[in-house]
Length: 199
Image 1: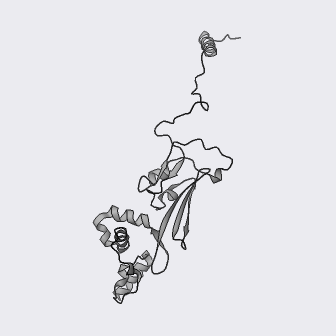
Image 2: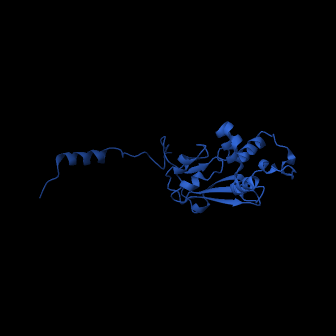
Image 3: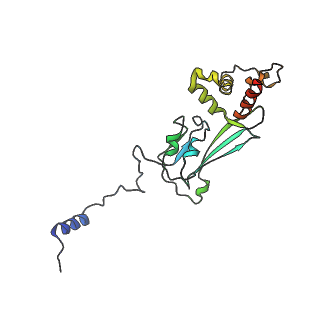
């Protein structure tokens, strides 16, 4: 029979006589370190509704719903499905729309009710009524591309709307044959309009 090593006996005696090596949680509040990946949270003012976070979420914890009648897009993050991988934060085009917080105490009886939401105004095609995108997304892109926005009438109109340069009567019918260029159109309708102009 082998006797235990003297060093191991000494460590066992020291651990019996010393205080436990713990941080006192949950009786003492724990402050997570920098870089801790906690629950993601939407920031309404910085989110543009571009769906980049939805596209990269591996756990499908992010979903969206478009309501054409109310002209509103709702992005929803479900904490019960989230794996806190930080892909949504890294993919965010504004880098501030969705961020991981330091919240980690998420225990609840109904985790399905633990939702983070962002609501954005939708822009619809003036010709067919299909969704073009979120207004904040178009405004963000217009600022991002700078002078190049003059090559895209939809971005140009979104930027002019933000600067209050558009007249109220913009949506009314115009007798001018190229008035369709001054409408917010989806890519299909704009392509169709340009092809018809060529003939």
